[in-house]
Image 1 (cartoon, rainbow, N blue to C red):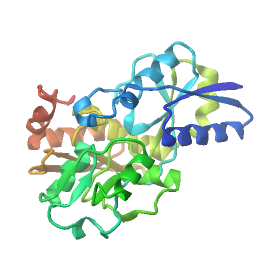
Image 2: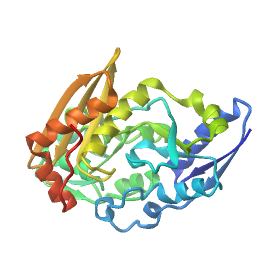
Image 3: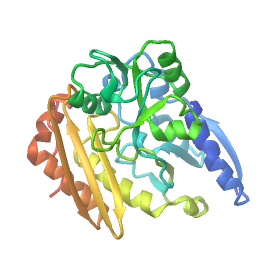
Length: 309
């Protein structure tokens, strides 16, 4: 079967698309990659939290999917909005790469070793909030661009350290400046971090069937739980919400965090359950009950909807 993949043009996005291409080609499919520039790729001089557009890394790719210019889209799952249009579905969620965030520095061994008022680069409110909860003295400086750009800016001395996702660095074999894998207890990852989401049109039976071997049950269960929590809190990929689920036999254990961007308040909740959606909603409700709504109202500037009971 001939398959056309829609992908962003960044180094990491292309690695991901080529990785899926190689797996599909090994099954006898012919594959082409179409590079599509997204809103998030065009706006590089503003922090992601200020852009605040849901689907800013996916909207144009979904348009190509809808128009039939591509047959499937390969996304970093954490970039994909929790509510898909009724026209699309997640045909596969791949086996998860390392979900943690990592600390990179030329000089310092870990977060604790940073000097007072050290400059740390990140454009993620989630990372910023959890970092400032443990080190309120740090100066957080926005950092955008692809992996190479961010590493270069660290090497040029603009930052004492930067925080990135382990998964992207592992995929690109650019781990040489990683000094610390940040524990989930200190920095809860983004929902879906480390997994790839393969999106198709609903009802494209042949294509969905061709992709079925890519679907990893543990990754689907854990990320479904994380994304259900994020959806129940009304969050996109650029809000100070962390969610991380681990399979424990038939059960899932879900840990989640909602934090003020300045780190002055961090709410945590965790629970176990069998049904991923119900577990995500239950942990979201626990966070809202403990005061998450007020924090999220500050960030969104609007009333946060309570999740379904």
